[in-house]
Image (cartoon, rainbow, N blue to C red):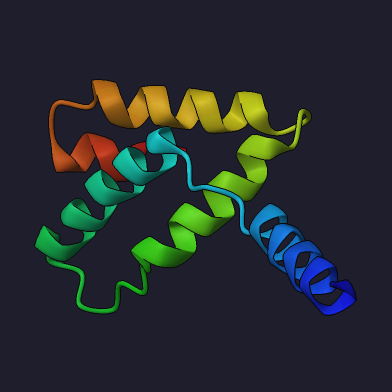
Length: 88
């Protein structure tokens, strides 16, 4: 019984540590990745997975949540990849 309880607790803690990725971050980073792939810059080091992870972490922080929202809005409103890549 004790082993079962400890196993259940460990699974619960592991699940709590793996935060779900934000839909806004996935959409924003996917669009940015597509634009980086289609750009003529060969030295682009953009990593979509890193973008999503960093975005989700910033989105969870109350102090930086607004920056994430503003950037996502800029990327969402951009009519071209040039405009996407200009978003800060």
